[in-house]
Length: 352
Ligand code: NAD
Image 1 (cartoon, rainbow, N blue to C red):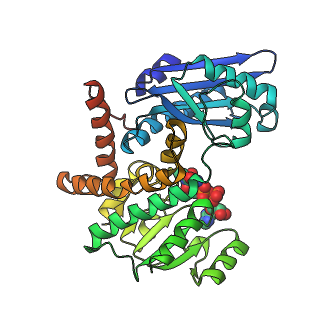
Image 2 (cartoon, helix red, strand yellow):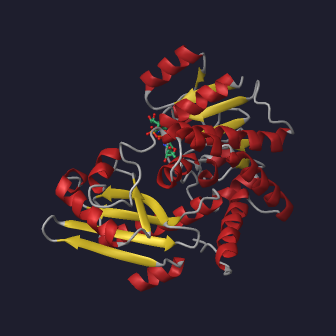
């Protein structure tokens, strides 16, 4: 079963690590290292089963290959899962054992933060390996870089749809006022956009709206709210059979990961005449920051590099138009061509 799962998506290597003394149980999946060492976070979760953990790490590592390739980074795709109750497996001895496991991969996999693993956990991992980023002495605040990249991506979409990239007066709805959404909303307001914000945290929502003079919309009314750009910056899976018919916007372009419930929803948006900027293309600023951290460079350089998202996305949108496909298709082709150009082989993303 394991060989079949690995073979299906073309993973290079999947390693299982145990440490009887500490109880560590981890899986590291290296999907593709054609463009560089594989990089991806460590997800710490009490999975229902080992199969569920394997499925997750295979899916996430493959997605990292596409994300890095579509961001023009010299990185491949990898991911790790540490299985168990997060309270227990974030104990220092377990994380140190995990650090030794990452180290044994010799740099083919570089780890970082993800669900239930933050800079504090990476500091412990870093006692045992150099192949780690996202520690407390690394570049901080990747979310502001992510937001800036999303802002630049929105400009590319606006230019394509309205023929000019001036955001002055444009109506933008930002869903989620977290680390990314807040920063994005501020940048949009500075650019003169008319911003409406939404969050399940009522207090944070009202405080932001009062401070910045932004409009607000209830979380369950956000999809039917008429606007030019809808920027989802909260949770995944929100664009689905139920919400897509409600949308009253021309562009969907935000930071949220896995925003489409299923891949076919990219086509559903296209059929409705809504331009959808693929999540992993537009939210790559965080990965750009992590890469800068790994290869050496400053936060300011990462911030400036995130601006390249605008031209790259523009190219993908134009290609999708020419070929009559979704921008998601064009982004995948872009990533696959980069990888094929690097090793002379062609790859294709398996369709679910
Ligand atoms: P966050 O946890 O800081 O903020 C999420 C916000 O969304 C919170 O304020 C939460 O209250 C709100 N929220 C949750 N459900 C909501 C709903 N149904 N309606 C409205 N608001 C809701 O997260 P973040 O770091 O800002 O990331 C936002 C999204 O962007 C996530 O999907 C994340 O995976 C993705 N992303 C983040 C980064 C980064 O650099 N932080 C990079 C790439 C992708």
